[in-house]
Image (cartoon, rainbow, N blue to C red; front, side):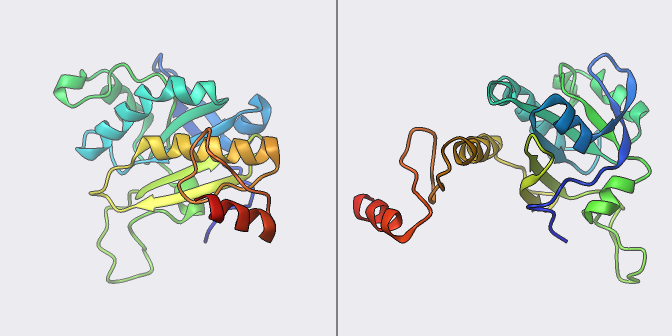
Length: 205
């Protein structure tokens, strides 16, 4: 079930910070209390293959997200202890050493089940997944409302620049009360939400 346009589920989960300390986080409250947007990206497993490339890509873009008042949070169903081991594994050995943003350790799968992003259904006898999450991504605004969600299958890595573009677009909507057309990027024309403005935009593009 889609959560776009709804409040992100309020579920308390374990997370690990850059110092290796485990703490509890409610993503909804984290957005509201910090008055920040959040990009929350789920990945299937620690110590795997596509996952570290995405985690490092989000780390490299973290300063750009920060400029946009946006926090980056990673998440999987691994335990905090496994996160800690991976955080202490060098990048050239397939690890994620140097990652600074929090990593949710949803080992109970409470939040993943709430979001319905697990690859295994215990009530389906034909289900053959590992009971881990797909590559699900949620963009959450300062009031805890989800304004974007997407899910990739395991083999397909994400384009981090697209999430920066989506944050820019949503911020433009919030700030200017305009809507953003296809392929909109910061600095390009947006539109008023009416037929006249749409026609004018199409005539110029």
